[in-house]
Amino acid sequence: MSEQELEPLISLRGVSAAYDADTVLEDVDFEMRAGDFVGLIGPNGGGKTTLIRVILGLLKPYRGQVRVMGKSAKEGRAAIGYVPQVGVEDKHFPISVWDLVSMGRFNAGDRRQGFWQGLRLDSTDKDIIARSLEQTGIGHLARRSLAELSGGQRQRAYISRALATLPRVLLLDEPTASVDPQASTQIYELFAQLNASVSILLISHDLSVVSTYVKTIGCVNRRLVYHGRKELTAEMLALGYECPVELIAHGLPHTHLAEHPEGDHV
Figure 1 (cartoon, helix red, strand yellow):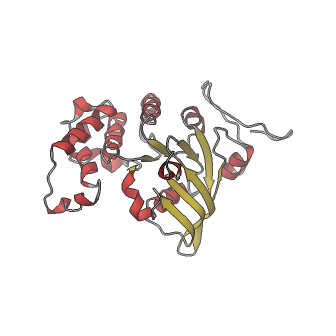
Figure 2 (cartoon, helix red, strand yellow; figure 1 turned 90 degrees about the vertical axis):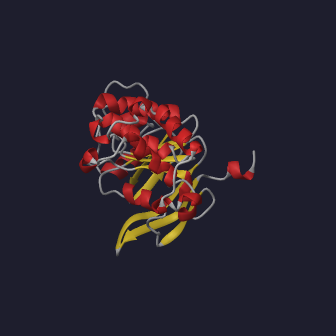
């Protein structure tokens, strides 16, 4: 195995980040490698979105080191396909599915920087866009307006856009927040399939569903607890929710909880 293959795709060492004087992330250590499917949970306001901004090089930490593909976050983020939360306003954006996904090609690499100067898609770009749509199962919707799609279909369109960048990592921010439970399950199953060819870092607050599909779990609430295993520990739940939590898995069989000391209630 080469040194490049051994090197983490994403590495954070002692990272602390703040907005003005308000520290949001403190002393975060994290590594992600090829083939990983990491789920990071945590409460609203706990720093999950800030962590995304740090990884993408949009927020510079005041302490610690961030490396993405062995480079600085800004240099390495070209290898990350980012799927942000979808807001209500996005539902009515006047654009076709094809045009939305094509934006992934205009953001893919240095040669695409001339997009706003009229850069056109070539045959390779078009093949990649078509393949990205087929990967998410919406190739037949390519010419439909984004506003005509269901919540689940719309989310698949945004995932297709991220795939069109040919990423090594998919970074997903609450990817099922705007879809119904059935569509949510189907999207998580899609992620499991995509993980065969791309590493995934998933940010969510849904403990039970996340723990069913991911390979490893961590918790973010200013600090990060991550042991590289698929288990929800008492430490994670205490950090994330600061009170005893009863985890209800809705009958899902793959939720993993670590053993807890006698007297702990989870």
